[in-house]
Image (cartoon, rainbow, N blue to C red; front, side, top):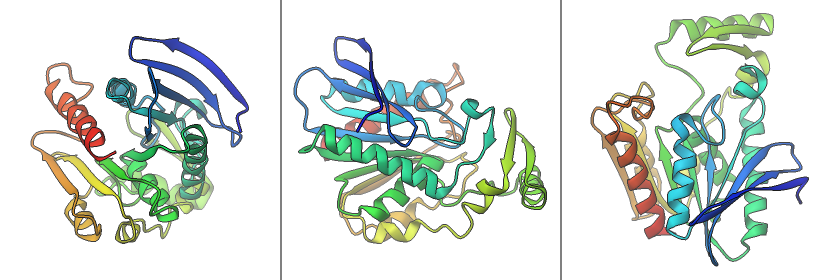
Length: 268
């Protein structure tokens, strides 16, 4: 299955291995010391990378390993610094690459209980993936998840999307210059992943800050999910990034990680 496997490092609690999947994306498999029958797939947000903003996924993987839980995190293609922030990813490409990562994880741990974690657009991707496999994951966690690829109320983003659809590409100025392409924008038109939750059979936790710029759809998602094991944590004062880059407010990201690890530890 693998084009390349490279050992990165060993630590007291975990072993990290760099994996290159046949679809061309790279990821890090982090496994705890000893035998494990629990594993989580970590799906990053828009224009991030496998370690996520502020190394949130790197830290999460380490904490999961301390609880005896393996994890696999990947870099989605067509996004981020890897492409010079020229965005060509689509809903189908993201879900397809997540699917490939899932198949790798199932091959590595064929008898494991599986979980999935999605942040922002990674949350949309996770909901898309459970639409393909509604019975595969025992549990799912969504951080500040998106229901669609749109930045509501951002006139600059709206203008860039219109120009990209007309001319093929356009620059959107955010934390850096991001080039939107027609393929990217059209690749998310009409996508509806929320309905997948009505068929999803596992446990569900959603976490969002009350200062998040994305629409708050979490209560609706919990109503859709048939499980009784579901919860929504609304974190007062937290923004979309849970202040992970703000050293003066470390408590938000620490609570985010703690709540997530405890959830996976209990529900896997």
